Length: 93
Image 1 (cartoon, rainbow, N blue to C red):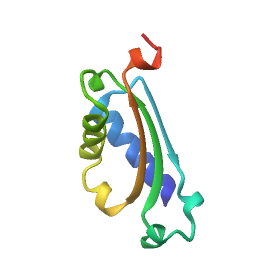
Image 2 (tube, rainbow, N blue to C red; image 1 turned 90 degrees about the vertical axis):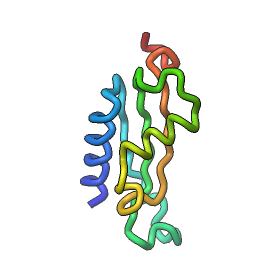
Image 3 (spheres, rainbow, N blue to C red; image 1 turned 90 degrees about the horizontal axis):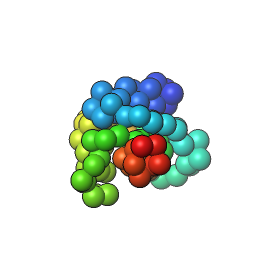
Image 4 (cartoon, helix red, strand yellow; image 1 turned 135 degrees about the vertical axis):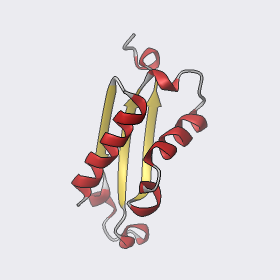
């Protein structure tokens, strides 16, 4: 089920940010037995590179990612590690 969640997260982030780079890792297996994981929600690690992060500080970038994921943040995601950069910051421009 987590693989499906990771694919859904990837789809939603691609739709919202048209990233030049996107990697979604399901890290749920690292948190087995963790109190927060008992509700069935997953732990994910996201690296995303998009021009849409230009002129946004770190907090604003995280809020934009949370907004793009919408209800998944309440229903399917327990923890989300985010590395959000612009192509210039990533050295891709």
